[in-house]
Image 1: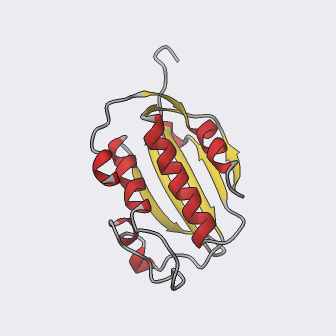
Image 2 (image 1 turned 60 degrees about the vertical axis):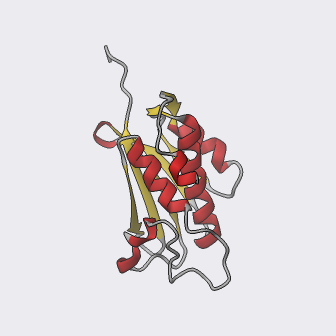
Length: 154
């Protein structure tokens, strides 16, 4: 399964997170801002993480969808935020479980319930974490933090 394929993280390369987010956002209506941050990891897996977050925000949230990359405290942080109905407090952790589908999702909406499980698994495989937060003023923010790569001598 796709979840099992994340188990092995053999390829580690320098990945420009902002560039990757901008490429993926070009396929959607998401707006991108932030600063360039390099992370060490598997570009293919990180692209899947970004794509899943953006697709979820566009499909289940409401515009504007905003993706921001920054580097607080030497960590790389990606936030994908929308103005949709939000995720109830009690579901913000469960939403990352495989096959879990939020009660706030409209009936008949597709999806396997694997997208956010993959996001969290990929983040953890890279030494990071994924969280679901309420957005001030309404909506949801998904936040992924990863170790930033700082070349030695800088």
